Length: 293
Image (cartoon, rainbow, N blue to C red; front, side, top):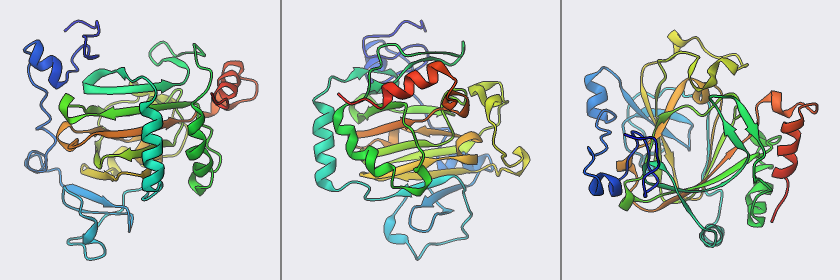
């Protein structure tokens, strides 16, 4: 397929229900990531429980199972979930605020609103572009995030609201967020729509995703279990991925896990090099990110 964006926003190998139907494309298939298909490959599946921060055997999440889980749990470091981060009233207010801003079509059935610098991960170029700050209503969650111990020194430099619509077959393929620009802590504020983040072990090299820039101590690859871990993303929750979970695991949102409109806010911080006071572009972006309009 051509790299030119299609009317729906998809391009290349990525597709959604709209262009699959209109252009008679081969339907998106994520059947390789099911409990059954993974089990056939000898890859067991686990579900992370936000209440006890342990991963238990299974695929779907039922909060009523805690504390009476079944099976033997495992630890899965690098995941933090805070349920009820927003009240129902705050969620509705934020949803209305985001919907008052135009949405832009994106790949794989998603829509987005992006506030951040221009980045080219392959060429390793960072530019301010048209970035002048974030919407004023973002102050609500900025102040609250700063009160989370894990995020006490978190400086947001990109805010991207994402919409996943089941009618468009929205999803996001397995990936690791870029490691050259984006720092260790990957923050998601899941406003509306329960969903899952599905995580599988990364078997590739350090040349992809700029993983060679990672400067923290991580477990040896051979010590990482070859399993699948499902991370619940409840509505009105805060999810943080860091450490090994950030750098040694692929994460994706499966099409079949989007059963209702889901809106989330993805926040990103800089890597250490851009936080250096002498890094001119880094400081320019940080200044822009502190502005509200």
